[in-house]
Amino acid sequence: MFKAKIYVNYKPSVLDPKAEVIKNTLSRLGQTNVKDVTVGKYFEVLLEGNRDAVDQQVDALCDQMLANVNMEAYRYSLEEV
Image 1 (tube, rainbow, N blue to C red):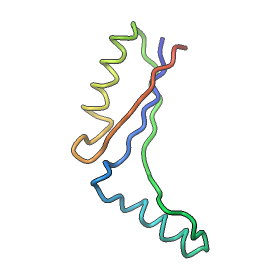
Image 2 (cartoon, rainbow, N blue to C red; image 1 turned 90 degrees about the vertical axis):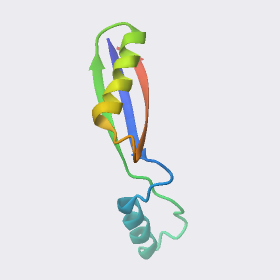
Image 3 (spheres, one colour; image 1 turned 60 degrees about the vertical axis):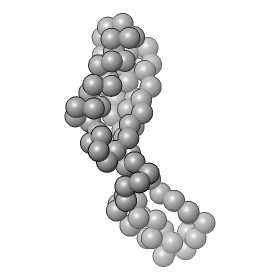
Image 4 (tube, one colour; image 1 turned 180 degrees about the vertical axis):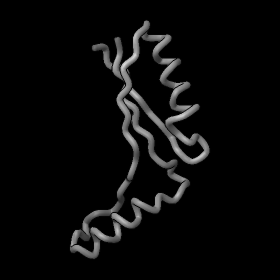
């Protein structure tokens, strides 16, 4: 069994409005050394099967549902449990 740890964020070319609001608010609160903020999504999915099949399945899950591949990039790691 494998645990997939999946991270989804906006692509660098896409404006992240939530991150901009957080960055501006931190600046107003006196946190002037904060230069960038990234907001994203995190998923953990447990899957059974061999590593190659699970790897392909996680990639398909991300492409089909978890990430909007037009605006978001994803990365993941597989951990045997």
